[in-house]
Length: 387
Image (cartoon, rainbow, N blue to C red):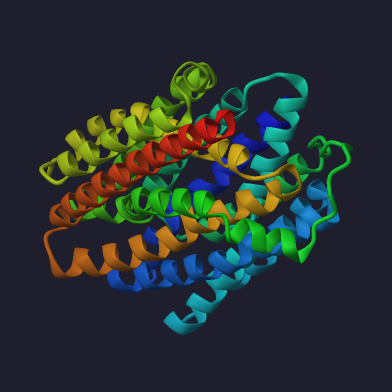
């Protein structure tokens, strides 16, 4: 439990560097908002392929901890190359290579964590909340540091965080030794032909588009509203700090209300969050507004990940989580960063967030309709068995 919590904490600190401050570093290097969005979207496209691919490797190899460490080491090497690139094309290639190795790390860690918590009877949310603690503390400290020394030292910070994360990963518990069916190609075809699973992924992807746009471009949005580096860091710190109690309570909330109800509730809160951001111009109010993270990000993430474990058979858990992350972060990230970066250059940034609120509302409605359809289908099948 301590090793997993420490890992999520350190992974979150690294995420602060690669997700929150990398866009600002790229702007510091002379890239426009649209170019930053394009570069990040290139990495998102790569993750769409990389996450399922490495998920298949994990399910076949069954040595997820070792694979996780190897991928982190390769991420360090690829990320170090990224910071040496001097043109948009080369930087996009470098970021894509980094994402090829780093993007599968999150679903692999989630698979290990869920396996461990199921075996020990502990709560996945209680482990996951340490990620929010890492995001909060990392955002605050890096906001202070970069506000004082500037964003230029980011490559050194990145390398240091990678090395620390690898050290912590070496202490993670190994996966369970339970016997599962050996992974075969027909199992993958069955998974990708499962309409229930695919319908769920599509609905979640729609919700995730403005979610990922915000993750990748909110720091830029704050700067466009006149925020300092410290205020950018403080805003992320407040958001992630508010996630901690939600992660702590998420296990009980899932048991009481179920994954789908929580997804629909948090989805509507997401839509409200993005629409209201559109009307805020003062960085101080944008920081205060981050409190809405309490009823959005942690609830959606925990409920969505746990829902996947129910939709996917045991021998495809790593692949199922990887495909989910590829859609949630990869496909949605590509759409969100590309459309968001382009939109913020062509329109008033608040209008882009308002559009994101509309998209989140559509995704939430689709999730509700998916749930209702599956419930009616189960009821109909149950009635057929009785007859």
